[in-house]
Image (cartoon, rainbow, N blue to C red):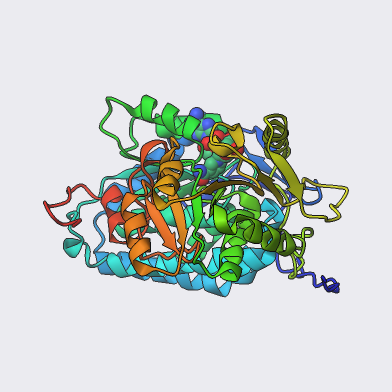
Amino acid sequence: MTFEYAPAPESRAIVDIKPSYGLFINGEFVDGNGTSFKTINPATEEVLAEVAEASDADVDEAVKAARRAYTRVWSRMSGAERAKYLYRIARIIQERGRELAVLESIDNGKPIKESRDVDVPIVAAHFFYYAGWADKLQYSGYGSTPLGVAGQVIPWNFPLLMLAWKIAPALACGNTVVLKPAETTPLTALLFAEICQQADLPPGVVNIVTGAGDTGRAIVSHPDVDKVAFTGSTEVGKAIARAVAGSDKKVTLELGGKAANIVFDDAPLDQAVEGIVNGIFFNQGHVCCAGSRLLVQESVADEVMSRLKRRMATLRVGDPLDKNTDVGAINSAEQLAKIRELSEIGESEGAERWSAPCDLPSNGYWFAPTVFTGVSQAHRIAREEIFGPVLSVLTFRTPSEAIEKANNTPFGLSAGVWTDKGSRILSMANRLRAGVVWANTFNKFDPTSPFGGYKESGYGREGGRHGLEAYLKGTSPKGADA
Ligand code: NDP
């Protein structure tokens, strides 16, 4: 039985969305070359603002500003001084947390309870964490010399969080940055630019250039960029790796995933069901490390499926600004089309589709939480990243079969294991080819913990001490990572 909830909308009065935004270069908002694009609210299709589209010349200006700030100010400043700015930014993020959360939900479509309770607190924590490293780099194991100008390109699924993952370690290490947010979610990055002004960050240390793929390409291929950091699709990641091959640029790529979430018959099933739901329906499944392949032991498969469907029927899909909402809007019409297409392919390949009964709003982009059973490893929905609220369920009998199926993917970003036995967790974690393995939990993030993938999920680590390596010149001394 589902209880009816009265609407509990978060007020959007706290945000002040301007009709148009320029580029943030050298500490100021500038017009750029005059072309622009619209950003919309995916829950309503309402146009939110007109945003400048950076050309090659604009990117060049931004890189020049970053280079000046690097040479004249930021790389000369002591780590303790840099830390003061990072702490100040972290505190302003906390102070303006509600504003950031509301704006993120409006521009991205994610539920306010996620932007408010997950994204924004981890963003602040990331700045606090790397502020703490700024004056201790000599103990990092990676040297203490910055690289120079970092060109950073981020996706739309966690706009502010990915910005924090990129900017906080770069600045702590003494680099300056040129960052491009995704075309569909530029607004919180532009609010972050205002926060940089509020924190009196020296001009040019952070530059935010908005635009689409061409702007991203101009950043990563700019000859005066020393370091490229990218999060997004494997396809674009490969193109970037090709574009920078043969140059001196240091690169980190955080790409796609198709994580196995493995449930053994001795797992506490109610907790496991919560973990399955969190693994795939958190953030509408727009999560690179989403637990999109459920591997469940055959003896408990029927029981898990019936509990899972019962739980899915209680998920509240709708207005991202309603505090009761569990699943918000799909970020764009393009992404919705991709989710629909792959789901139809799942059905036509013979898997059985079930969606939670729910009323979807008539405007905006929506997709009901969906599960496919009877999925085989050859099905496209078992192999490709759907990047939506769609779960593919496979079964296994033995731990070895689970490992074989879990590792049978070109990706290797994350995995989950649900079991009562600690020894089994350790043995599974050793054999799973995934950068992160969660045990009896899923989708847990902490700034102190490194995150990154194997194989087509990319290379390099973000977060923790390991995350410093990407922004420093030294290499890891032998044994430092042991
Ligand atoms: P992209 O990889 O295209 O986008 C990621 C970022 O890269 C965006 O800022 C994008 O700009 C930019 N970009 C696009 N082309 C280039 C280029 N040639 N050089 C440099 N930067 C570029 O992902 P999409 O948004 O198109 O999503 C496509 C699919 O990728 C999704 O359906 C999903 O499966 C997967 N994806 C995976 C993510 C992950 O974290 N693993 C995150 C996002 C998507 P812009 O968006 O403005 O065009």
